[in-house]
Image (cartoon, rainbow, N blue to C red; front, top):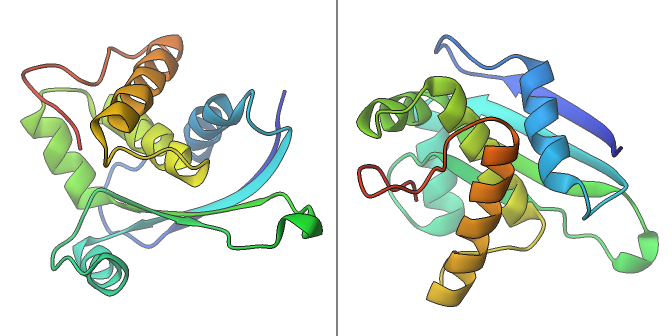
Length: 156
């Protein structure tokens, strides 16, 4: 079992939002096998904050579903800080509707997806995307959700 310290910040007016226990379960499952001890924060925001951060750090003018910020610490410090996730609640809700999946399933997917980014996985190159998508699918299925990548609704 992973020793996970999770700071969940709710800066969104959207409802419903997933409970802290669910967020903890999704993140812990993703980290299992990668880390024994980890600390990270999850900030749930509205469109304006997501858009500002997406523009500032990615040069993209618009809100996005999840932003991942890896902790930039020297390895010799050996600290468990993994980084921060910023998730835009209104975008997650809209995508869940568009992809015809439950809100809980899409929240779980965004938590798994963002946490994998914090672990260094990416999906820019096709080969890397295939690896990351398989991990996401395996993790989400093990959590009791359907495979997230279907022809009807591919999440990116």
